[in-house]
Amino acid sequence: MAAYVATGPDTPSPGSPAAAGESQNAFAQRPEVYVGAAFAGGLLVATVLRVLGK
Image (cartoon, rainbow, N blue to C red; front, top):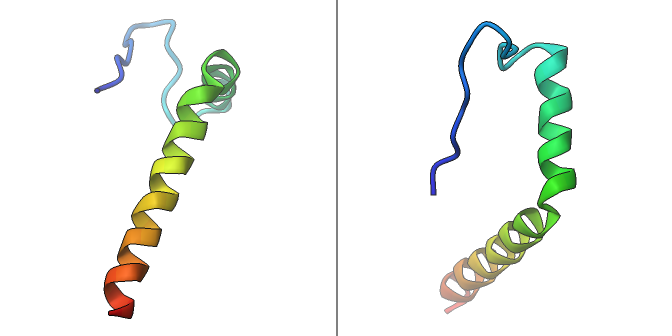
């Protein structure tokens, strides 16, 4: 699922301090996405460790 990135004269560049505020707002709006990604990452690491342990 690709994120839509708005471009235009009012959109700050990705490395600017204003863009950092937008990324914090993204977390505040949908924290469950980050929790789900952390859970999936943990499962991936556990699977890799299990395969390497055999």
